[in-house]
Image (cartoon, one colour):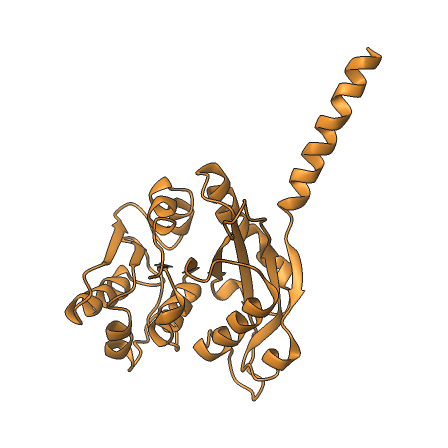
Length: 257
């Protein structure tokens, strides 16, 4: 019995260490970057990973929906954990997961939203403080975060190996809004692997928004953009997307040239 107890201890400790690796760390964006942001909480969540041999971890950035805005970044770990579980389940690591938070209000007043310039500053901060493969930066987001994926990718496509907006809007003013920059976004995303996901039964952000954006990319000459509309899903389609092998197989097969 004593020997059995001794044997169990290392297994228990190993399990504890593994669980600790799956807990997010709250980090703060360096003030030299955060001072110039418009509506970004300087705190973000990091689920860190260690590289294997000479292989640096990939970087997956997740942008939350409207329900996640505020100043308590710890509220977002539940949504991010679905991505962590998918990466582990389908053996796509090592990969850091970073989860920024949009502030409820702008520094100069008014409603906060995802700003490409804010997220560019976040990535600059991450590049200075985190070791990752710069050719494997992946971007995804849900609802308002889907909009964030479109606008960041549409303004700064050079960063990304792949972009996957989920039930995303295409305008800063909410689900009914359509950006005046749509054609410019589409042209910029013509050479970036894009896979959009939507729910046919979505009454919050109609699937037509994602369809319109992908059609615009194709019209601009994009040949590697595609969309999947789940006929039986509504605005919660992310639950299906982020648990599917297809999502991880597609995303982690991409690498920026």
